[in-house]
Figure 1 (cartoon, one colour):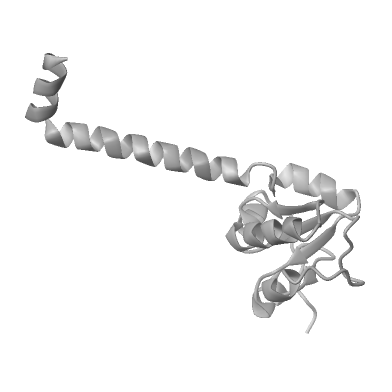
Figure 2 (cartoon, rainbow, N blue to C red):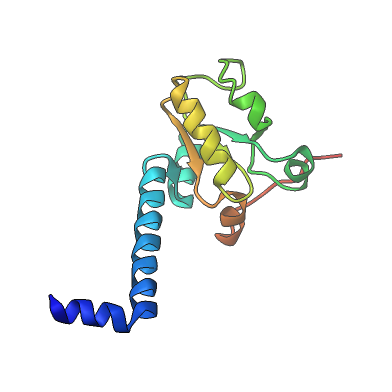
Length: 142
């Protein structure tokens, strides 16, 4: 134990860096666990879409018009998070929420789940990840 105390007192920067690294690692792990079960990978999302899920794009209308997933519905996150069962989304049907990078859609998915939409999921990485995987986007006709 004396050797540990001597090491800590003679190497404060090394000890501080080690502690900060451990804190960052724990925070990252907790963040990942918070997303578990709510986010889908691209292949899982494609499978869900092929099974008839409703795709809801919560990006700005201009970004949606520039390119979106086929048959996606444009719905601002504030409107979507009201969670009202409309002709657009149903509680019993799968819902895939999409945004640019996956953060806003994750928040909307959490809110929808709290409102009883148990089949709501977020697209991990958003449209940016969708494009990186060479998945198709369609532009709105003007």
